[in-house]
Image (cartoon, rainbow, N blue to C red; front, side, top):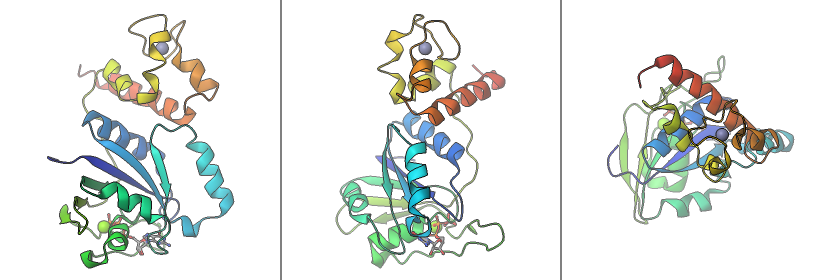
Length: 220
Ligand SMILES: Nc1nc2c(ncn2[C@@H]2O[C@H](COP(=O)(O)OP(=O)(O)OP(=O)(O)O)[C@@H](O)[C@H]2O)c(=O)[nH]1
Ligand SMILES: [Mg+2]
Ligand SMILES: [Zn+2]
């Protein structure tokens, strides 16, 4: 999308449950497009402090800022509001996570249509149908988008994929091989960092999975 500065990746803590795989794909896509990214963990009002702590642990050392919000209870929205001033921001994420509800909470005049969550499968019902460009009173633009549940990786070579994980950058010069893909190469500096928890383990696991996926495509 042209003229966009940043993306807020919205994840719902429950109903629907977080899709971490999709989150990682969105972050890779944002890096590939040169967009700054923030993670909004919404519906914090619906989960226990224990679950919140578990998620905080899972996302330990993520190289992106994480905001726990409740759109309906209007919790923790001020940081989000400040991020939007004077910039063009896309809100993206699965159907039903609360993208439109968040935008309405940030600027009630928007009156965006919001949907119900299906009681059976706990998913959204694709309430937002088209990309909507909305000017903000405080300056800036937000883009509300329809929810999606699958995202293909961009066409990347394996070294390009690694370059889209910003936490690898300070470590990679310590790898023995200059073209190290941080898989099982001897003298790799990234793999042990993930094992020791110096970089986020889940992200490293998804890196390996995405690497397999790109290799299987053999498009490069
Ligand atoms: N309890 C709670 N419910 C929320 C919160 N945010 C959104 N919801 C509810 O979740 C449902 C879906 O919200 P929407 O804003 O329509 O979700 P969306 O991400 O815009 O979904 P699509 O337009 O289908 O992509 C609505 O019933 C909202 O009231 C929240 O922070 N807490
Ligand atoms: Mg919506
Ligand atoms: Zn390496």
